[in-house]
Length: 612
Image (tube, rainbow, N blue to C red; front, top):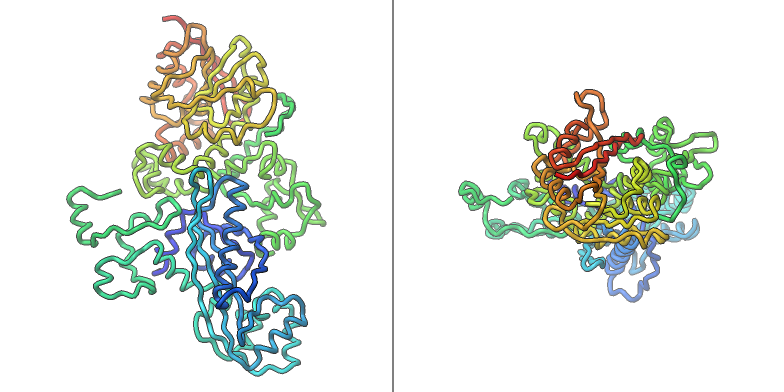
């Protein structure tokens, strides 16, 4: 379809629609756009008299709606969406702006004004591109409006009241919905019909063209109109349609023939403190993790937390979904044991409250979002990963990832924070089991290499009050780690040090911890890291590895085998068996290998450095 490349520019971005309008959602969904719905809380109380034109008022309202959502999401998550779309539709007749009626009498007055007359429908649209600079939200706003002329037939008072009593006028600008019963009132339409419904899709696509596809020199020579949607061949040489980043990109100046010649020449571009023990922890949600890796769970769990049972229609209205669609989603969640269904409605199970609500004690919300935003996109290239034997970030990013973590996981503060939230949730889930798998009281100091947010360090400090723990990770990670540190007595035991564990000296410690680190790397880099750890260890020092172990014959451990396939798509590494890890450890002077299965998806291995 000719519009696909235009909409496709947004497919791999986090797009938010700042509107509760089901009509706008339907128009954009039908066009193939994927987006979240976050209704704006902006109070539409701008002074209409201060605007020279009605469309100026509509555009400003749309912009304020979008900016309110962008700021609210950034303050909540420290993560800006890539794009926020705001819209506002008004009806004008005789210089008077008509918005949504406040009651039936107001609706009748509006419709009486429109009867037998032509009026204008204006929709103002704001496209807000968001980014983060110096830990502040930065926005770029693109605005436009569309006008459509609509003429009503002469309408009798009886017909007007019949329409008002249908209830349809109450949530619509001008008091009518042209796509439903209100269409019977309309005699003629001049302009974009969808603009009257609530969103000017054609003009929106043209605006995307202006933002993302500036005209090529040959287009200008042919006097192609810039406000039209280009022909399909316009998009053939665009390699960045699926690229990352929120900003509109600039087209190279060369023609396709010149680029082809360049390609032939080889120059193509490409947590509140609580008292926990192993006995008091909730059961490990193994089955739930399998579900998370299979599909995106709904945000309804937040709505149902600590609430009385609610009907599907009530929940649907809060998240701007259809009642029938919501009911089906809730029913499958209930069948899976995530919700309880009674005659009174749906409510969260304890599992949903603990793990799926975003503010749950062991919330996996960050892990879910990481899967949604990155992992599942990578898995769409699974066939290529199997054929090539390499990760697929170059396809997902639209360019080669020279440094896997920097280019894929840490490319911006938002993606870095998303990755950290995922690791924080998973680490909190298993930290107590890891800290108590072995008696580590003989170690007075520990270094959690690649320790990210310090969640495991905190549990080690809580379990061993005499232990000083250093979290060692990249500077960009350490910079954001403070966001994850709750107050508590363990804070004085935990220290953060910035560095690259492949290049920089490791902090001195009696125990080194590598929790879910080695599986990210191929054997040569694993040897390099273990060699650096061994050089930092004195005889008697310990090395604690935490990984998901394969069985020796690679036939039984389904979870580990699936995770190993996951590593093929995402990283340079793989999962390994206990025998493989034992060989690696012994090559670097670590012996007395012990292993404990942690009861969930992880295994802990403790080895001791011996004198050469």
